[in-house]
Image (cartoon, rainbow, N blue to C red; front, side, top):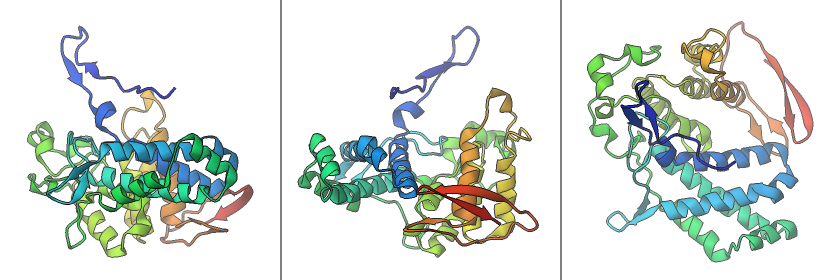
Length: 329
């Protein structure tokens, strides 16, 4: 219904005497940009005009307004910054300039400006903009904030998950390790002090916006962060699998894809009894479509296989702008 469902705190004992404060509902603001990303992806695949008129354009406008209100001007840098957030990696809370948050916010603002400009040439959509009181000045403001938003990357292409992340104590995780059980107790007890992350963060943003980054930057960040990720969330493996497959790393990509696909079938995380991991399942689908097949929505649907799955084969239907397309690999 549009209201925040995340609890502010949860009990740690049956009597409710000890409670844990939950900040994700208050600080995990990247979800706003995720919704805008989904609006654009849906429209590019469907060209659903009714959706765009009814709510799609409105979502893009309102989310852009949120980011303009959320970003703060830092005169010392001459940049806009976004402080006190939680990124997809929920081990580190209240951080400044989280890479995923800032990059996705930038993309959100760019999308809103693009759609709004195109809407000005369309009578029905222009009316929607008028109802929302969108002006040329506001569109220019979206462009200005997006162009000056701080993105924490080094000159060599390695991007910092958030300001100060590279100053934390380092700890390398063995490739293929899954879950927090592989962490020493002293690391787990003070995980905020380490370069250890719960799930794909920088890597997730880079995969979603893969066309915006050179291949060498994708490789550098994938190699750096996969050695520091516990994959304690079922949302992590699909994103790493997607980028690995996109980069043509067949063996490691398929290994992670298989683990992710079996999340509930094999109860990989030991909590399938609590419900189906629908986000992970969506991530597997994403890894196949956009990682393995590099599907590109345009005037027609194009794809190119980027990696091998060995003897594994699959076939499925994709509905693209009203037409059913059969894909077999």
